Image 1 (tube, rainbow, N blue to C red):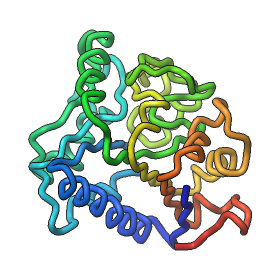
Image 2 (cartoon, rainbow, N blue to C red; image 1 turned 45 degrees about the horizontal axis):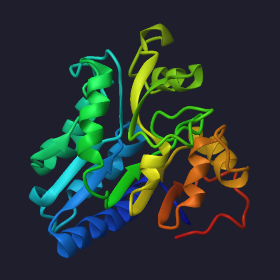
Image 3 (tube, rainbow, N blue to C red; image 1 turned 90 degrees about the vertical axis):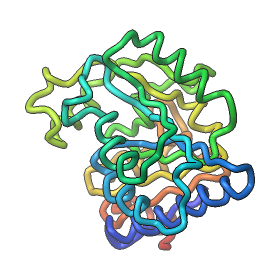
Image 4 (cartoon, one colour; image 1 turned 45 degrees about the vertical axis):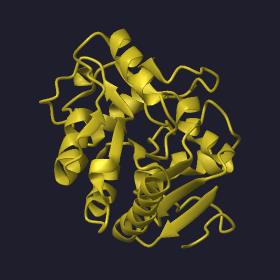
Length: 250
């Protein structure tokens, strides 16, 4: 695992996008396509915007999988992760092969269908974030580190739901769905390469817990430390509570 601390969100997003584009380009060169997992949330927008502007990427040879989505939230809602993925990546690049998690239909059928597609071949690169409660995708603490199921139906904890209010996707916590569809922890770790984009001071406590504390289901993103080909990008704000020894500047 490599930790990189950049001065701000803009430089973080640019460097992460450069590494992401290299991973996609190499996968296409090596086996004709790139299978990508994409996270969507406010912290990912600048990174995704930078990625869509990277030159020389043949997006028609990319296949994109959705990381997580609320259950029962329509795609027209501003907080829908399907809507965010479409608006910030798919529509901008013209990607034609993608798999959305439809929270409006039978959750069991969605995780079965998309999970089957996901596990049909290896994932080349996964783009993830880290929540204010340390969650990875929607795997809130205590996260299931053992299940081999590719996607799960999960209950969202109060801290996770309150984060969505703080990001202004919902006006109060009662409007935030209590359940979601999420890629499992072990499935994320099966990606050949993982890039975690983690800006903003509101993530600093979670960053400290996940990268200086124990590897534990109570700090779900701490499991990234077990993956040999993971790069985590921080800005100075999100890395503010890390020890000097860990603040390896890019």
